[in-house]
Image 1 (cartoon, rainbow, N blue to C red):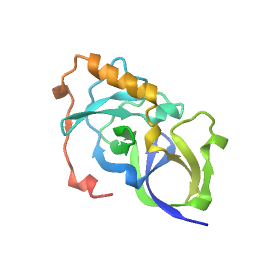
Image 2 (cartoon, helix red, strand yellow):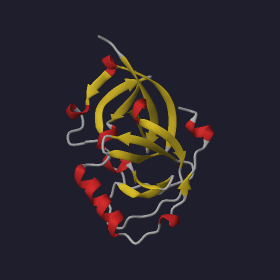
Image 3 (cartoon, rainbow, N blue to C red):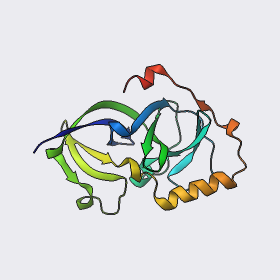
Length: 172
């Protein structure tokens, strides 16, 4: 049976990724982050989102790229994972659209050991990596981030606070 689910499509380096739209809380314009010196390589820092420090993850690291410097032209995707909120760095947010289940291939067959991708799909004749919102941080990475936040002498005020922007939030 062919079914379709709604996804948010975005670009990380030269790859197109998709997240289930139900897991995306908001899209924010990139802001300055507070670095976490002992955080895993995938974590670029933390961001103050309405008084709560949330880890910013660069999915490009899991795709084999070096960590990306943050540019104001990028976006932070605020997603709700099973373990809590996380921000995902996106170079560009493309669209919200459907993926047909008949076009989805299990990622284990194509990318062994890559834990962010659940499946790979064809969308408008382009390969799309479908990400699992619960897999951006492993259990060990979550523990390392929590420890880094506790041990870091940073002040929340050093990170810009994300403000709601109707023009971006309403685009979902």
